[in-house]
Length: 306
Ligand SMILES: NC(=O)C1=CN([C@@H]2O[C@H](COP(=O)(O)OP(=O)(O)OC[C@H]3O[C@@H](n4cnc5c(N)ncnc54)[C@H](OP(=O)(O)O)[C@@H]3O)[C@@H](O)[C@H]2O)C=CC1
Ligand SMILES: CC(C)(CO)C(=O)C(=O)O
Image (tube, rainbow, N blue to C red):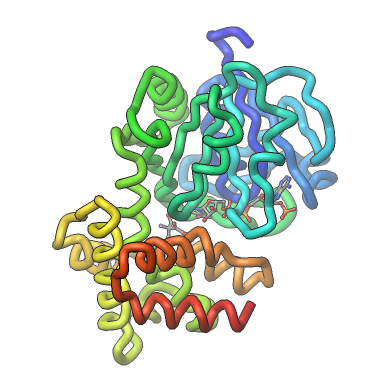
């Protein structure tokens, strides 16, 4: 593709994929999508958005199903599926990755890049963390509630010209971007929030943030879980700011009550990203002999439920 109109292909155009696809469309990119169950609806009507950004509804320039072959090799393959056991993400992107294609992950969790980096050693891997509240309302219908910021960096380290070029596109589309030299550290920082809140919301029957914090003993439990994630991060070589649990709780209390992505999956009967967000943290704690009794209990209880 030409530099003047980069081509991004979204794989897994659900809430996150279709939202950041809309942003790249606003930046003037050619944006295509590979979708699964919502193919017919998206083919007929594109992605219909309700958003504080205004009318960001869009239709993919090329719409594909799993198993199709690409018309063009994209500059960016943006993977925005859920990170679930049994989903072979390296195989999923394979038909769409050519020489020079940057593989961009916009997915939650820890230690989720390695399988892509190992499978595609010659393609830049750009790892992104989304700070946004967006959810699917029905086939091809998405509600963007608030926010949108992305933190991004090369995996395993650095923020090079590939990241800068993608940052410029997202900024042109109206999104705030932080480039991170150490994206793994950024994943730990985000996990201090997601690893307690997301699985706990499932144990609490899909509860929102304030319901969890205001339940008797709720804030105390969230803090203890955050402390266990902090201790694990430190043992893994990522000491995080000691005031992070305080600022996370304070920030969460200031936001309107909010159902995180795992709560929404649970409430909609979809599989949850238990390993990416919790299991991988527990595995790293066990590797370093860090005591994480509350995280282990939560993981065991949720595995029983699954
Ligand atoms: N939603 C949010 O506000 C936030 C989400 N995140 C993270 O972003 C990531 C994406 O989450 P989100 O967008 O909410 O998830 P969604 O469930 O809304 O979207 C995932 C999409 O991937 C599609 N998909 C799965 N497998 C395939 C496949 N083989 N081929 C094509 N499409 C496929 C699903 O299709 P199908 O309908 O067929 O299942 C669905 O459209 C997760 O890691 C999540 O934790 C991070 C921050 C906020
Ligand atoms: C931080 C938050 C809550 C939204 O950006 C998220 O990561 C999620 O919903 O899983």
